[in-house]
Image (tube, rainbow, N blue to C red; front, side, top):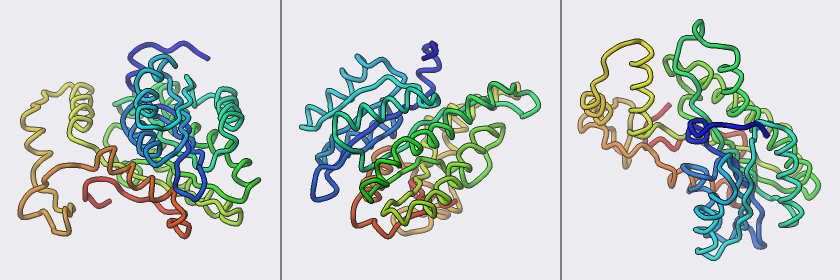
Length: 296
């Protein structure tokens, strides 16, 4: 495994493998990026439903054990923690096998991993910057599916949940590799759903929207790249202002402004739990927004 610095650890989300009780028997679930954010929310939500959760992240195992793992066990769940670079084939293969050895199977795979990538124009971007973003955001999804699907096919049942983004459906200025990778996740999801439906496996995608702090971070990065002044207060006011394409609680927000709770990790975890259930057996090849009511 290659050595990474603290900044990269902070930037990446991570891989997890979990097992929820959404069927009559205990279910095994694999989740990526469970060290924090959406991955952590998904892992904890599944664990509360009775799942055995395998957590994978770039964060050291002892840190995972003392944070997410400890929280899951406190809630009465099982947690298996891995430090894994999910953009690398051998570590993913080993993680999947060790999870099956420990829990007996994997019923649900949630690919949540993602990094923001560089904030710059394509002509100023290095090939390595492009490749890293694609590797983490897209190759990881391929690798997780490659090594988990044979187990699902063997038993004729499985749920695959890939995390894309609202940016998987619309442009994001100066973030070409991120947008391309997240758009590709949707295409991968739809095509894979058609390929594995015959085996009783569903494949769907969740597209979270940007929350205020994350959007602020990205906007500041674009301003720095363009050598422009950045007004944080003005940005926050604009973010909370009217969004003509937003619907909250069943009403258009064009008159009242956007109440901003752009769908957080808990909202996405709720959607993931449904997609993992038997009740969602007829849902496949779909990409579902969890963006606080903003429509893409």
